Image 1 (spheres, rainbow, N blue to C red):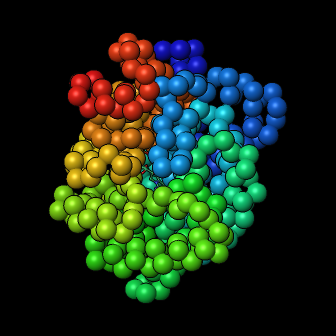
Image 2: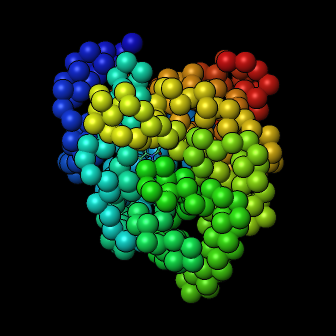
Length: 377
Ligand SMILES: Cc1cc2nc3c(=O)[nH]c(=O)nc-3n(C[C@H](O)[C@H](O)[C@H](O)COP(=O)(O)O)c2cc1C
């Protein structure tokens, strides 16, 4: 354990955990932003947390990832951390999920720690400033970001928006973010909204994607874009094998370039209600790893290597990320692991990739992925 890890786990984390989980989240987002805006803290942050190496870089379509570890959706819902996230050692960032209309989300409390299990339960309910405001912010800050920008969109959290209106709602967000993002993520698994799972029905996904492709063509023409921006779909952790297969079939026949697996695992429990005042929510962190690995493996066995798999869910240690790659992920993302292990986690994951490459004489990240798929970690 380095000095930094020791001080995070023994001093900083216990102090932060005395405060409300959502308050710490907000403070950390603004803390990072303020540190980045000041020259000296930015240089210190960057020198402590970032690592560059030829073994880490990865190209997908025209998108260049300096390293394969990203910040998952939900940490920076409104794009405040673009471009600050670059000095935190990530290789890409996912903003959102953003929705067509702004939303304050579900009533509080809506985020709880299960510290013994290195897990969180959240029922945020897609709180965000709405796509117009977020897109305007991203247009201003995107050019100073040297990393790929993923933007996640979801349906506005309002049960009155359903059926065709729900598709139009998605399409509105899509046309706003498509010209700005390097990759667009369609979050079809919003476990914390009353109607959040609608598009995890393969027939509904088909209707959504066919409309999204029409909007994409219009936007490309309007902005005279020569290359299309890859579109990915994010699914929930409780999707079953046959639905996953059908969803992938729908994705493949609608020019979807990849999938993110997984979102949080929806749970309902009297215990949770009693202890945290939350009736239900999505579980993230360590207990999710087994499930997300399983879904990543299932998905990767159904697609070719040109279909991008982003593995997310339960990565709290570098070895978890190695397992994700071994199960078929090309990229990984972290969120809950950052809270439990601190901001050094991306660098630690990247360092272990470099170490494996050096020990095995692997020249680049593709060789690393190939090596892992045939060897145990
Ligand atoms: C507080 C919180 C908010 C989240 N919000 C979103 C969201 O808006 N959109 C989304 O696609 N995923 C969201 N997620 C899910 C994460 O992106 C990720 O899929 C999940 O937490 C599993 O990864 P982890 O175990 O590393 O946290 C959220 C997760 C948490 C903990």
